[in-house]
Image (cartoon, rainbow, N blue to C red; front, side, top):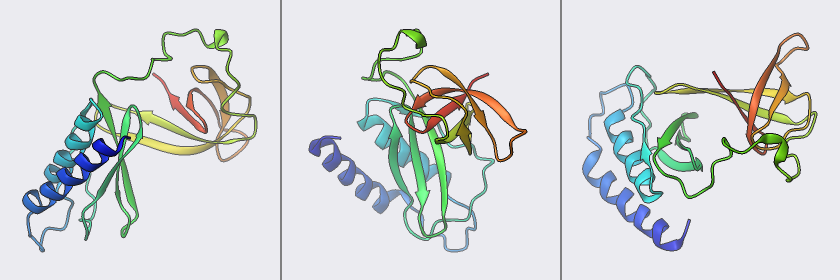
Length: 172
């Protein structure tokens, strides 16, 4: 991110924190309206739109302001470091990066970003939430290719599309 965008985000987050966070000490769950404001600001600075957090998610209220950072061009991470929770918030809208979904995986001349035996974070995404878990690559893979992965034991296997170094997405 450029320094101008970083400065603008920091100023916006400080203003948002000063005005949008209610001082309800007795509220036990996170204030998702505030999180939506923060994610919308960060996504907007990236030229994207953040998906609102699913209100069915019940997490303990973060004692400090939750941090919002970009994971990649398609998602933000909302974290509460002191309580150890993290959410992935999908973003929609135009991106500046070229899409690899339309490119043929076998025509990519780049080197594999996942090698056989690598630990891989596999993500399953729905419209309002995502779930991630660890797997091990059973083969090499380039961005856009579908590769075989193993779960925690040798009997569980699955296929997922490579989306980056050490990351794969389970598609419908």
